[in-house]
Image (cartoon, rainbow, N blue to C red; front, top):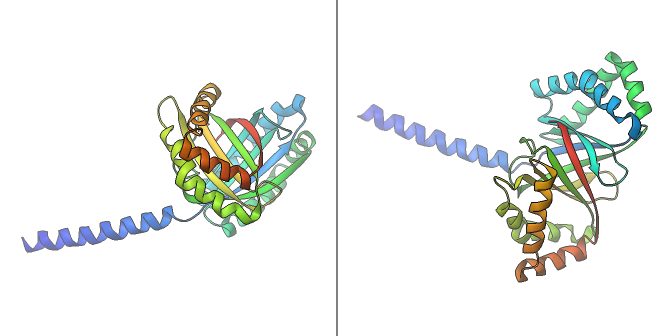
Length: 253
């Protein structure tokens, strides 16, 4: 009986520390290195082939080795000039920079011809590093998403960004949470700018297909008209006063 009691106590302690550790881990941000490519539309499929045959094995190996948490390759469906996106995710900034630099060198050394061909097709790009906001989103940004993605890139007043984050957490985010499930969104996340160009905040959503994304988005926009949410949206739009929308096909994740 005494041994059972001791075992139970040890188990309770282990569960307490385990839960605490899991909560601590959940509160840590992830870092997302996104490279947005401008490509020749009539040759994009060749760029996808190069990514799949020459680059993918190296990125997969980096995940298996624990150098990065995940990666994905996105294809333009609707939006502006960006045609492809390479996304690399790591647990902290140092790991992200180390991995991206090492992967670039490995690919350059082992697949130089593929690299040159890819650069000819996707001749320019913009780099951003995004940081996740713990508690803002349905799950870890590394979790599997739906095959169809919708991204909203916000331009915001730097002095009001923290308030915008609070509005998303307290009022706007719960609307997104209510629309996650079967026949609705698969996931959503809120990311903040760390390094890069003019966009300061990023909302990403995913679903099984684009029609589902748009149907769910329409339902959420209707909820945004409700009094409490409408007030928050007015405040939010004063801070983040313009944005660009993109829809993506998630080819590899």
